[in-house]
Length: 304
Image (cartoon, rainbow, N blue to C red):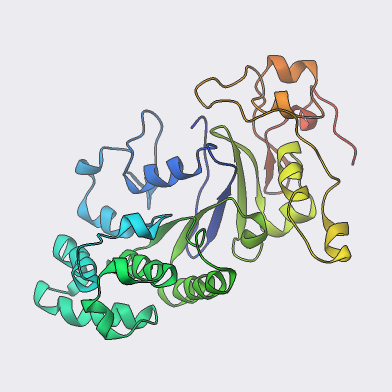
């Protein structure tokens, strides 16, 4: 990641979107402490938590939780669900619940994610994908966190199950006053979920905007490319998409990022300055930021 800076407000959903290898999951893992940052700062409620996870206070670990992308691999296939859900209480003595009260709290968690109490005795390997996703969400909620990183929470689920999981997450956000940092590659899904959209490419933020403004007025050529490639059914929806942009070439390796603007080898608007200088993030409109020479004083604004 390079010069990545953003904030998540209380009860807000910020979605980080980009192709594989853009650095989305790295951001989430760094926020919750799985990865240690090599530079920079991460502030949570005014406290810098950019330290090795072993040095983070338990209260911070409790308040920052994650739902991993693949519940198949993030849940221990040998342990009963009840044991998996008890673990956070035993580690954190979660907020007024002593170890003796773990059993009742597990039942409450299961019911909260619409699973019956008898799931406590089941093994995760016997569950469906949707059931595993619910267990993973329940585990993240066990400590009553304030910020939850959602790493592709519905990526491996059927569309009907995706809708139920998203609706459940929204209800939890309203009831428990949660903030979400949602990592995704699905812009069409995030349109109905996120308050703000952040577009990433090769470890850098390309564009950041309120969701409604982003879909109405995408500025960065990469954002336009992503939006124009969203499959639609109705002609009315097709008319709302940006003009089709065909990017050339393959995504460069993250360990061999091109000089200048990292997107310039694939961009249809490439100028000499793009090959030479890396653009900086600028506010083009209110709360709408973009990192592109097309919108800098040195470049020429693109006409759509």
